[in-house]
Length: 188
Image 1 (tube, helix red, strand yellow):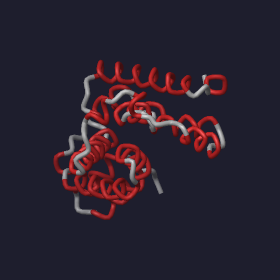
Image 2 (cartoon, rainbow, N blue to C red):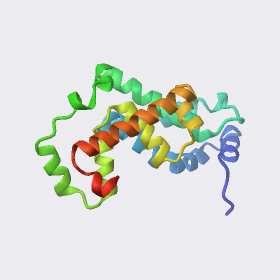
Image 3 (cartoon, helix red, strand yellow):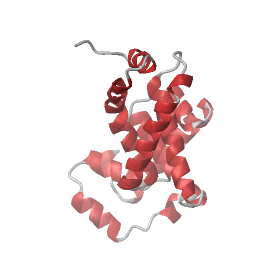
């Protein structure tokens, strides 16, 4: 069977083959779930937001412009769904804006991370999770999901310049966090 592109699948769904939408779900569910889990910090909330995102995308397929990539369009929907879930739980925006020093209570957390991580990559990912949400997401989208700066810009609803600044600050925050934990020899 030939590998269908996203646009071919979307055209098929628009023609009435609604079961073909599962091809898109299977193609993007893992990355979107990872994005939402990191944003919401809770697997059950992430699963619910993922389902909502796919439903919103399905209902919005009629408005999808074929000149855009489905992945970028869908990640934008997932990101906005995650933000809506955050605000509906009445989490404060200041949580995102707090400095790393105020945001982290280290103590036993350090021993837990050092004791449970098997390699440098796991450790770095756990430290990324301790960054403010936007900082962590820009690093995940750019480095792990492999999105371009332009795609990250579209997903997060930021200008390209703001994405570059946020990515730079996020890298520096992560570096400072790693230095603070004396992990620079192994990672940096």
